[in-house]
Image 1 (cartoon, rainbow, N blue to C red):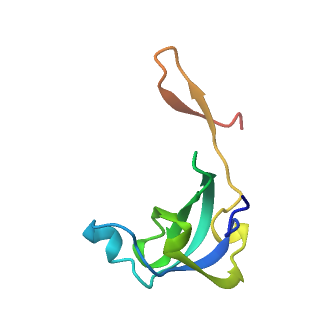
Image 2 (image 1 turned 135 degrees about the vertical axis):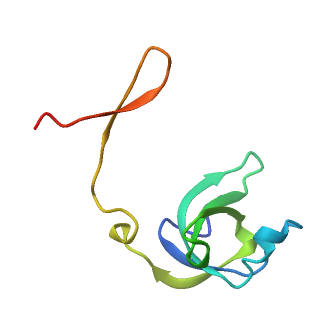
Length: 100
């Protein structure tokens, strides 16, 4: 089954399917699809970066979302900057400094 929404697609949260007050407050909020995953039953789940919630990522199902018919750009969310990260023997991460 093909997903209804694609990466960077702009969406509106129309029907938050939860009794959690925090997510329900997102009703009619706008956001951008940043990730998607297909569940074992074939349905799709989406990671939506919500504009009014400081771009926090919320997991939404297809029937919670409505397409706005537009797409954001990759550059709207990612600057192109990167860092190198190493992992020590304890499994702890650290930033690898540039050799400049």
